Length: 493
Ligand code: GLU
Image (cartoon, rainbow, N blue to C red; front, side):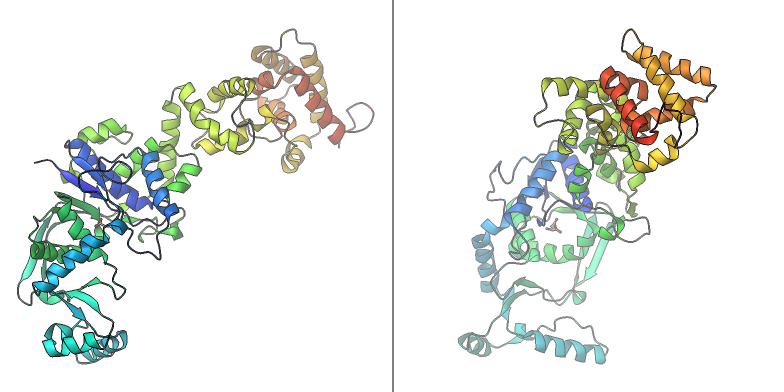
């Protein structure tokens, strides 16, 4: 049997971290078992879905590297894979269910439902739908239809018995039918609801396994009942544990950023994010944390997914991202960094040859100093262009008494250098440091501020070598004129 799984997002913009984890686990299950990954877009709710949010889902999945074997843009034997293009199919299924007496129109108005709900509660009964319209006589039904009353279509849940399934993650689940209301399949406006469209498609698309978030587990007995009604094979189900924020509440916007788009924009590598997401509920038997995707695919077993909630820890993810950055070959890191430098205008789009070689030179300087790609620009900005001196850094660092003399002597030493290279620059500045009897920090931090504009940056000797002698001396001159005006440079501030 070929394993067939699906990711079935209802598109509403960039994918939520939890849904990305669902996509990933389905994908891993398919890839580990040589199965088929289907992307089915559940876009029947016209009020929420736009072409843009549909695109965002596809883009995010591609960025994460989670390809699909059947679905939008790639097609497949059960196309179309967008539910908005399958409305006729759902209509035909509902007609069949109506004819077989397994579904029925319900004319109850929201006011009537609310009134009966309150009455049931007051009488200590369960407040669910009471099946009134299931018991309408043919005469009554025909009369309501003739009056043009609006109606929904409900599925009739058998009164007796219970539905049981073995959840691959949480174990056996049994729900008494007395606890399941006759649920709505089709809305008043004729649009199909999730509990109709999902099982219809899971059946028609021959899904063998349905892997999704635990929040959807309550729907599963309903969907199984529908599968029985339609004569489908029942897929196996696995519900993935909830993802919680640091405070133990389900992960949401309150905990910070939860969309894949945010991680992409902020310089997370897809391979780091995927590695991190894989560990939300699953752990490899060998206990590794940093694990390339090929290894995850090789080791992924659904039995190793735990039922207890997973905790989303941005710090750990950021740390992992730094590890992944450090493991990239320099030319690959250059390729990844480029859009982040273009974005803030440090290089042109596309970069010129000169900019490209400068970028290549800064890659080794930032590699060990960033955890996210978007942190690089600030460290190297002063190498690409003159950055105005940060006033706070100037006050803190340049305000000290020894600084004018340090800058003056150093400028003279740099001017006299024979060759302008990193080692020569270091030797010159260390010479001044020794003469003045300064600690390295005191001797070098002022150059970060004066040359790079800020007291943090890529290593200073390398930076100065890349900037070039003329520009470095010019920046030192400007700083001396601006912060230490007057005859000589020894006037202090
Ligand atoms: N479309 C549903 C959602 O995004 C998921 C459907 C499913 O996996 O059954 O929540």
